[in-house]
Length: 393
Length: 157
Image (cartoon, rainbow over the protein chains, first blue to last red):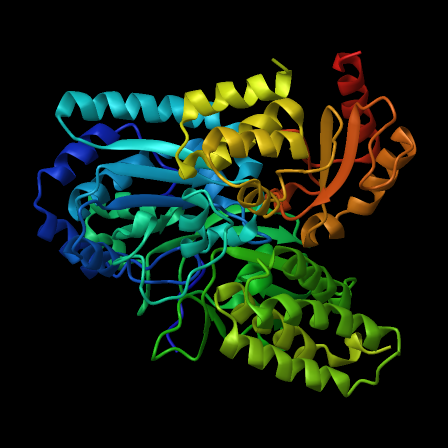
């Protein structure tokens, strides 16, 4: 399994004053050139799912549609994630440049930033940036407009098809996939939805070229990633690191010397216990890698003073509230899991009941309509299996 | 014309009657009124040519579109993992003690409502809370008392 030494990088938050130049020089290339650059960079989406960005742009550009849309997903709601807010407050021009380039490539005239309601305080500053950007586009003859759409406190709206529903004025309930957004997205038209951070990486690729981007990271996990580090760490914050490091190196750098477990990828991600730090690589799942965990960038550290029962209880409370309620496996499953671990803890059910609950998460993984219900199994099974004794009375 | 009706009329004429504008209209009402009354939702439905049930169904999906009467300032304390680990409960207790209300309640003078919310995205600076749209992080019981005190001074009498 290929691993990389932990390296701090500064590409995301470095100077954005050259945004006009980067926009002009990128748009001087034809669309095929831009798509090829993104494809060869092997950039994967940084929201957590890791879909290849170049392919997403290519599919959307080829899909038939009277209109197309470019959407920046800024509905950052995964527990332990706070990187997108930082990007939007510090280098929002980079995001807008990448949105404009994407729009030209796919043939969109409208861009939307779906911003979570919790970040409403960012709106005045963002609107100023958008106005300045729009004025520049106007002067250079680029037909592209960006607007902000505010969410209202629903985690599920970060799921791209729920996001479309919300934009269209409905309850944020995910749609069935397929059809995928590249064919049938916002208003039923081909749509690209990219995470805020993905767009900034695209900017890095426009600026330095795909080859330099690819030098960073390991096979199947190229480039850098912003990590939101929180929990029991003396240096909580946002760090840009090269992909492919082992979790043990990460813990050495960020832990407090007593790290018991790390939650990789937020509440919908996996809990890794101390004994598995060495064999766990942070990157996207690749054919050649052993245990490689994808992450939207949330890294929560827990030291030995923490009870993993409380951690799991907190996650399940979160999922229970944030489940959209549309499909039964997720709506009822989250409630039963939450109630179930409390009953075991209180001694009202015996420990074997945890096995039944594990089976339930498998069913949810198979039958839930969207990523929320499917991914509850990740944290549930990784916590229950590794910290079985802590779950029991 | 009553204030809610004129607020709705104003918002709808500014934003448009298309269904896509329903959320911005509802957010506009909440910005002024802090919550959506049944009356407000009916007025929105009339103005946008939707059924009241559609408006209610959409509005109640979103946790920031409250449909119970709220105070002038809505305090939302983050209860998700990191804030919870870093002392959220002490913050809640300090607020409850200072304002003499429990979670979900509004002070009798209508100034504050105390709620909990899910991850606010300030996990590196927990505990965190929102007061309306303002974010406060790295909270301590002393700090939160000072913050609420300053809101008390500016509250509408």
